[in-house]
Amino acid sequence: MRASDKAYATLRDEILSGELAPGTPMAEVEQSTRLGVSRTPVREAFSRLTGEGLLTSKSARLLVVTELTAERIRALYELRDALETRAAALAAQRRERRVFEGLREQLEAAPALLEAADGEAGIVRYFEIVDALDLAIEDAVGNSYVTGALTSARLHSALVRRLSQHDPARLRAAAREHLLVVDAILAGEAELAAAAVKVHLHNSLESALARL
Image 1 (cartoon, rainbow, N blue to C red):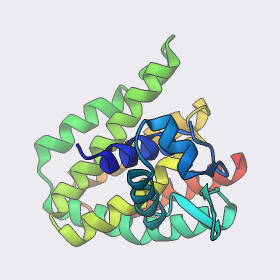
Image 2: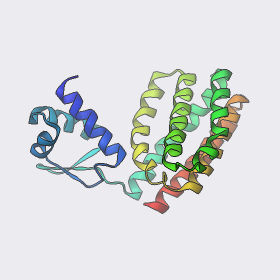
Image 3: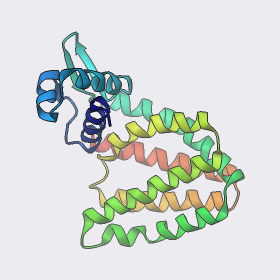
Image 4: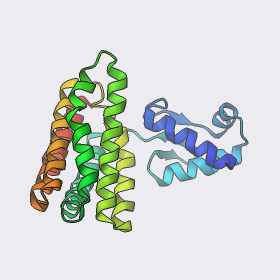
């Protein structure tokens, strides 16, 4: 792996995990020393992260980790609503039943995972199931343009996800909402699948704004 790719992957993971918190200043010299690479790979990584919206330029010399604001979150959910409701509707028309039947079984078990004694492991596993559902919907749609747009939107959704990951009630409700999405897709009900996604996104947005 090239040094710039390694620096990019490391910084991206740290931003998405919250290790590099929103508003954190990002200096080439500091990060190159910390990552053990020269300034050029770090500069290239910064450029990619800025293009993805994970870093924001405050001035000609200052980059910071992009901050979450109510305005940015609302704008993100407007995009997700447009993309994900349509994707769910298409998935209901094109889905492979076996895939979504397997996901349904996993989502049915999600509340127990979230209530397990080792809560953190349960949360991690729950989000793995959610990610698998997202990918299954993308695969069912089979449209590379839609997939590309969803990938970009979900990158930023990972930042918002941190706001709810320590809210057990919201996570249990989200698991039920995802189950309704899967049921609608399995039933081949495009409008119902889109509506289920819209309800989930509305509730997720309200939760995120309340915890911002």
